[in-house]
Image (cartoon, rainbow, N blue to C red; front, side, top):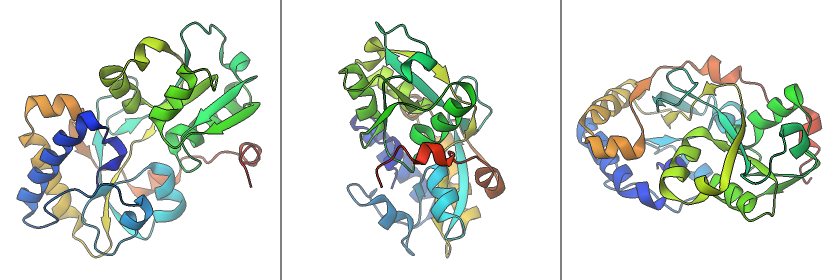
Length: 247
């Protein structure tokens, strides 16, 4: 399952990427899983290959799955294998981050590193917590509710922001307000019973075999080894931020 970056414009490229991984690996499902619950996939003892987010990994999956590696997307301002959150607001809204905090912050879900954890840590360090929040279900929906004036600002995964600028009109409607500190990007994982090193070798070979067109779509450049301790050291939001969420 490669559902973290699987917008319609990327699905065919993700299918080809998995086919290459499977060919090098020599086993695995013939097709990617789509439409299934993420947690069911991530916790399955039969999981061969998937991608999760840093916050779910450190809070619930560590010790239950193996890290395969971390894709490097060559994101601006980030070391290899890292990403960050981009805070966005409407282009015509000239307020700074402190002023935007007077309004509503849109976030995808409470276990998102880039959509919730990183911006809450950033706000506490550099500004203050939002006056109100709105849960949307996805980064694209967070961007859309800001564009549609249902929220004032949101934090998007930096790669998702680049993809939205490429494949939607949201880049013409929204502007970048701030960026958080880089943290390890979304890792590839496999079940405890799998050979993680073998899968990592297959992924690296598949990345090399991608066409230039698919590399351009997926943005993946390499597979980086980032130890679990680096993921576990990323800070969680303070209790003050958690109090904004519905019980």
